[in-house]
Length: 144
Image 1 (cartoon, rainbow, N blue to C red):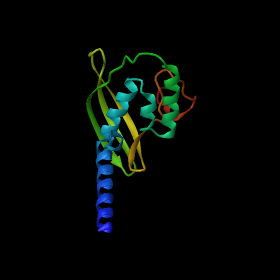
Image 2: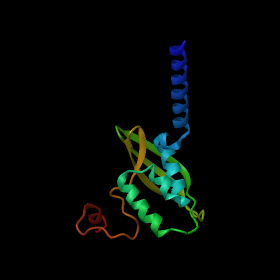
Image 3: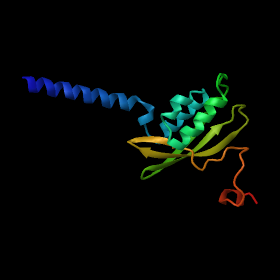
Image 4: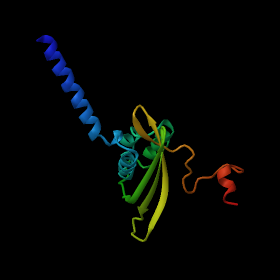
């Protein structure tokens, strides 16, 4: 009887654990992770977004958190479409988003890495508008 009770208890714990994971967007497919991560960043919830980010991306989010500390979030990204392709432990999501003004759409590609059964946003190699690139780098050559 004791063995049966232990087995039932273990099954209940595993079932609860699996259900909790399935409801957590951090354990979702790449498109769900991208939408949730962007929602968190839009609302200046950088610490929560860090849980869905690689080490490189966490460093960038930490800088954002310091820069926007105490400021009210004023961004709301509206996704028109997301199309993701998975290649092993990497995913690439092409996103079409609506400009806040409603004046048009723009595209971006998000890179994700799979670590410990979770898709994480990877911003290594990401160059933000206004940032300087190293002279002679492959990225800067395309602009010549």
